[in-house]
Image 1: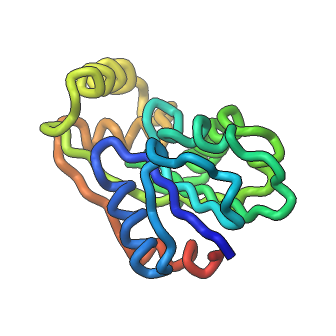
Image 2: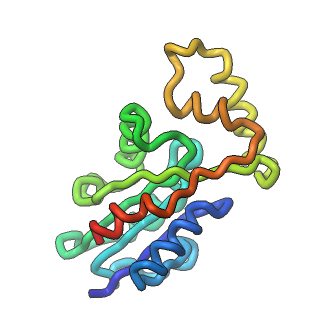
Amino acid sequence: MNNIIIYGSHYGTTKQYAEELSRRTNIEAISFENVKEINDYDKIIYLGGLYAGGVLGMAKTLKKLNQLSNKTIILVTVGLADPTDEENVNNIRNNIKRQVQKEVFEKAKIFHLRGGIDYSKLKFAHKTMMKLLYNAVKNISQEKQTAENRAMIETYNKKVNFVDFSTLDKIINEI
């Protein structure tokens, strides 16, 4: 079987997960920017960082897919908010649904991992976006805040790392 791990990572936590998954499974990990032909693979494991509701590189990469019948697709998101929170998971899945073909979404096994953020390393545009987002949600009443909002407020302007390689076990079992 011809397998590949593809990842989209701006600041490194998704890449860390992809490299560790590669090490544990002996499947090559490659950035989505370097993927030439995705249809050559039978099993595609895509790890993407969550940015502004989207999964980095996922739509661009998976739109190249055709002949889905003989493919196994595993999608893994990496974000700040708690992936055990049902509301958060529903929001992520709804965003994925808008980014990929219906057939891809229905066929994919989807997993969610927790990443991290270091505001001191953010590019100006991302820092500005996070500040605008923070200012928009910080005054929302507690009852109306989502898990994503709370995670962003709690971690704003800090360095936090929730990377936990043991959470890869469920993905490895699926592979």
